[in-house]
Image (cartoon, rainbow, N blue to C red; front, side):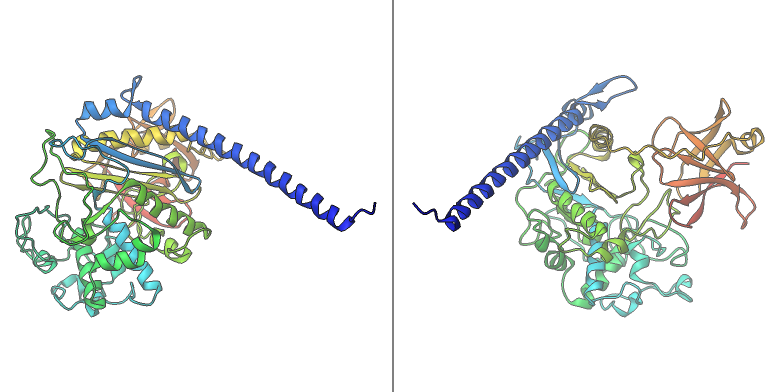
Length: 504
C-alpha cells in the first residue's frame, strides 16, 4: 500500500504543534499558579504584620479597631499588574453596608496630580500650553494686581507645581442643603474660611507653597479656554479611555455621580452630615475613585515611564509630570506629584488626600511597576496611622527594597562631627530635627522617614546619604546669608536647596 507522505507529514506536524501547545499551557499554568500563590502569601503577610510598636505586630483589622477607622479599601500592584486587593469595614456606620472593591471614596487632594496629568495630556494634543500666560485663558475672573507679578508671567506650570506663590491652601467641604459656591466665589474669597481674594506671596517660580487656590485658577483657566467642565475633560481624555469605571470628578449634586460610595465619618465614628462632601474646587479636591481604578492609573503612568504597554498617557507626558520641579519641599515635587519619598530605596511618585472624615494615599515606583492605593472613611487621626503602618507592611511583605550603595562610605572626621551636630529648623515647615553623634557616626533624630533616628552615611565633601531617602545631604553655609544649613541635593540632578537651617 502506498503511503501518502504529504498527509503523514501534515499529521505529524499537527500532533507536534498540539504537544507544544500543551507543554506551553502546562508551563504557563504552573507559572500563573505559582505567581498567584506567591501573591496570596505576600498579601497574608501584609495584612497580618503591621508594626504596632517596637516588638509587637497586629493585623489590619486590629489596627482599624484600635484606631476607630470605620472602613478601608486597598489595591496592590507589582510588576505592572494588580496582584491583590481587599476591603474591610463599612460604608456608613448607620447602615452596616460593607465596602467592596467598587466602592468609591472622596480622594481629596489626589485630584491634584490627576488634574496635572490631564493638563499635560491636553497640552500634548495642542489644546493648551502649560508655559503660556494663564491670564490669556481666564474669562470669568482676572488675576489680582500684585507686585509679585509685575516682572513675571504666571503659567499653569507654576500653579500645578505649587510654585506660583498663591494663597488659599485648602477648602471646607459642603453638603446637600448648603449653598454651593462657584469657583468664582472661591477665588474672590467669598467662601467659609476666606474673606479676601486669592493673592500672591512671592514671585512665581522662586519658592514653594502648597495651594489648592492655585489649582482653582488652573481649573478656571482650562474651563474658560475650552468651554467644558474639568469633570467632562477628565472623562473624555483619561477616565473613559483607561476604563476607570468608578472614577469621576462629577460632584454629588450632579448627574452621573456614583451610588456606591463610602461616607465621611468623624473621630467618634459618626457620619458627618450626609457623609458625601460636595467640592466645587474640583481640581483641588473633587475626585472620587477606588483603589483599583487608581492602581490602574498608576500602572498606566509606570508603563508610560518605561514606554511600553501604555495606551493613553504617553512617555513624554509621564516624564513631564514626574520631573522634579523643586526640591525645596523636603525631597521633591513635580507637576502635581510628590517626588519626596524613597521607601526601599526606590524612587516614588505619589500623593495623599484628606477631606474631612475621608481620604487616602496612592504610591507608585518610578521603575519596576510596584505600588499601592488605599482609602479610608475616617478622619486623619483615625486613618493616617493605620495607612502608614499598612504601607510599611505591604512594602516589607513584597520585598520592595534595594540595598543602599555604601561603596564610597568614609569615616566621619572628628572635627566635622562637632561642627555638624545641633538642631536644624526646616525653612518651609514647623519641623525641627537634631543631628547627634554616636560612636563616631552622625544620626538624624527624628529622621525625615518618621523613624526615631537614621544614620547618615558619609561619602566625603561634607556630604551624606541616608537609607530610603532620595536626596544627598550636605552640610555647608548658604552663600546668600552665610548661615549653616543642611542642603538637600536630589539624586540624579544638580538641584540643591538649603532646606534646614542650623540654630546657632
